[in-house]
Image (cartoon, rainbow, N blue to C red; front, side):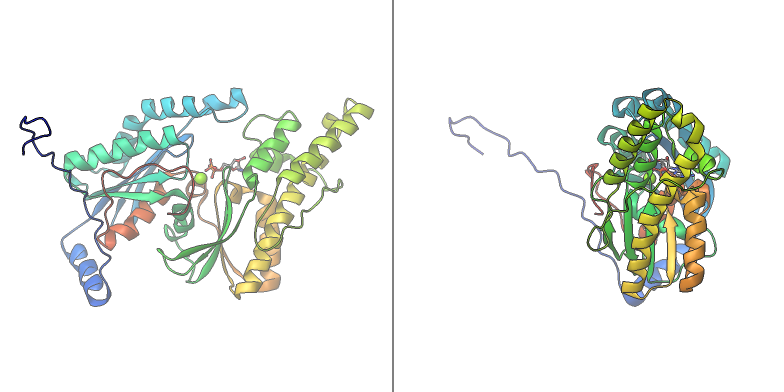
Length: 372
Ligand code: ADP
Ligand code: MG
């Protein structure tokens, strides 16, 4: 090609975008599934690095062989997660964690048939570490790369162990960064019915703990102290339309209450810590359970799953069990190792895609928000 000033210019070829394979339907989909099963064992490696936990898991034919997690205790001294520190720690840990997961599963790198990894939502730097690692590994091994949405994976963590919920079911996902009620019709068909407008439930526990001078993350400590106290201090339950949540008003009410009481008696917190924690927990649990009950009634669904780190809360479990008995719900809690951030749930979500022959382009970018 001759350029504007007569010199010869090479026409630059646009690199071809790898196409997202279409989801096969009906008989073809079934054949594909059977074919993959007959070919032999299929091994999937999964990587999760969306926040402050570096995790890797290995799955064989949908069965979990290993789920390794390196947590970053370093953030406790700052009273919350420092994104830049989290990315650096992921960088240090990722190869070690992946290696440990493969060793525990007794699987060689050469045996892998696919690599799944969280693409978002999460911290941009943290996600980039995991994604780059997973994509480079998939490219060098010539196997499919499957990007996974962290929030969808929390929901699909219910399919790792038995008993599994029946479709359609409602999932309350409660973690340090998210609070959602999701209607799940099938693995790919999810609809967010409601979510937090400000703080997440775990964040509400952690920020309340900060006001009381408790170390981060305060959720488990508040849970422990609350068991020895009574919810005698009334904090307001916000009235938000529909199925959305709000926790920032509760946090402010706790802040002002503690400030006023400490002015009258500087020893107030230490004298009444158990009752204060019981009151905080009671309020957060009430907000969650009222909305979930409303959603279950509105959609006429009795299959209810709970996911995310706050699912560990004993007050939430007790209240759900009580309300579930009254409403005739079937309740599902994944094992604790699959509730907090873990690659096991990423493997489960990736496995559903893998079975359908879906793979993601290698130019998949990390994202901070969304259910895509
Ligand atoms: P994220 O993915 O947003 O980092 P996780 O799913 O890892 O969140 O869960 C961590 C959150 O769960 C923290 O906010 C922590 O305080 C909260 N948490 C963990 N255990 C409990 C508990 N027993 N009671 C209340 N909150 C808890
Ligand atoms: Mg999470």
